[in-house]
Image: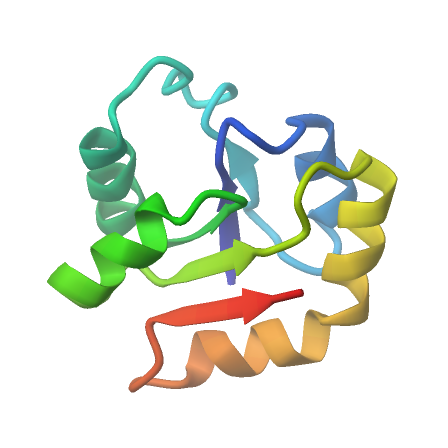
Length: 110
């Protein structure tokens, strides 16, 4: 299961998540730093990514359009990259189970 990190998350996190989530990338690394939400959504859908964001925009899209792509919405507010890395690491099993669940389109992590 590969993750696509939104622009509001540090691109440095992509490398540290690679062992648990092979193929993970960041919108910046894919040339999508200035892309619209619709373009990022389509890229994630086409390339089988699960979007990871701190914004509500993509969770709203999954509510309207369904999935794929799936969305992980980090409801942490402003926090350090280290805290986000720790949070995602602590929820690895839950995230992997979410990826396999055919019914759920959005996972909210606090």
